[in-house]
Length: 288
Length: 247
Image 1: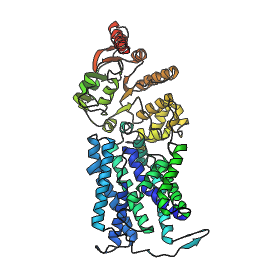
Image 2 (image 1 turned 135 degrees about the vertical axis):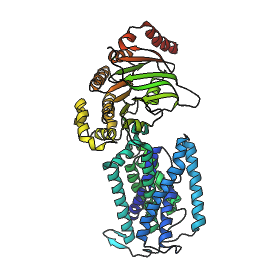
Image 3 (image 1 turned 90 degrees about the vertical axis):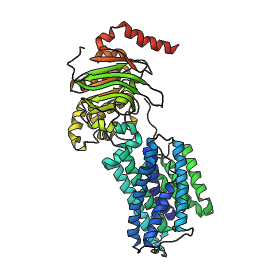
Image 4 (image 1 turned 180 degrees about the vertical axis):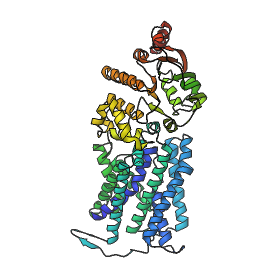
């Protein structure tokens, strides 16, 4: 259960960007997993690779999140904004993201190698008992950082001008422009913020498990399940969906083999959307 | 109503525009709006009325022709830049942010001048008192008429000099329609010039200083509201085209 909550929080952090990017641009980003991997790889490179003078993992993690933000900026300015201006269709854009994901996974593989590697710090820890559950201290830190990040995103979306602007653009781009909002700037902010969160998700997952070149791809289906379960395009939905999917997939390993983890998560998703097609926090609008 | 002293605020000259490559919806349409006027735009479905507003507001690319605002060429200027220059726009559909509260919708209308919130909120809710009372309600839960009020209030938050209204009475009950037309006259009386596209041609012409009749992407007739109301050619064109399409 506690491990499920840990995975759920990591999924929620990583999925918020996926949901926000879908919300403001309509883009289904199949390369989002590679943004997650990017964060973990940068943190590993700076803290444990030996290629550059090593810095503490916490500092490397912060720099990885900053690098992730820059990677998101590059995604939007170099690739997706020009494609949007050329009025590329949704299917074309999905194919572009699939190709981009494939390219990045293989680039990571060439640069990093196929062997899973742990960070140097916080590798071996003894679990501590906290009432009915026992957790490693690093998992507690991962959960605390994930929860703080989600709280921060929630407050930003609810209380700040930029956050309201993001929600407005997700509701209607034309109306947002008609209100004086620079829609391109808001979309860029979503890419930067969403990619930074994905990178943070990668660092947190790397701390709990190991760093691998396909770790983000491995989480992609769970992230999609989180986003759809919570309600497509809603950041809060991705948070709730992430936690639920993480819990369901991890708790199921108590009875089932871990190889059915993703199957269980998808079964939960299918069951939930049969009952509530718009997702947990998706809303039906009044007509007339 | 009679025409008032012309000091051109908005001019569209021979505008050609459309959505799909090679398909023009507007085929050379012109319109002008003087300071203090309400200008109505009527015509059959598909005549290009809404497209004309969107082209003037930068939401549809102008392929040829010119759009001027206070004499400056603003052709194809982005919508958010036009808002900064004092133009407000209320679309026919998707006219509110449904997941945002009424207050947040109004805040979005003031996105470029957040520090003026208290002053503008008081002014705008003076026109629409119900919105202050229900400021925490989610806009997606409102009726069509209530959404139209939120939409007009949002567009007024920036204190625009010009307001473009796209079929403000569409889909509303007769009572709400009448309230909307009364509000438009109040807004105009407060100093905002208005271009209004409308399906309710009679009511539109009654409150407009001048109006244009669009047909097949061009301005076919223009005159004062009274002139057009009494012009049999307008009735023939307007009803004739509609009748032909129904056959």
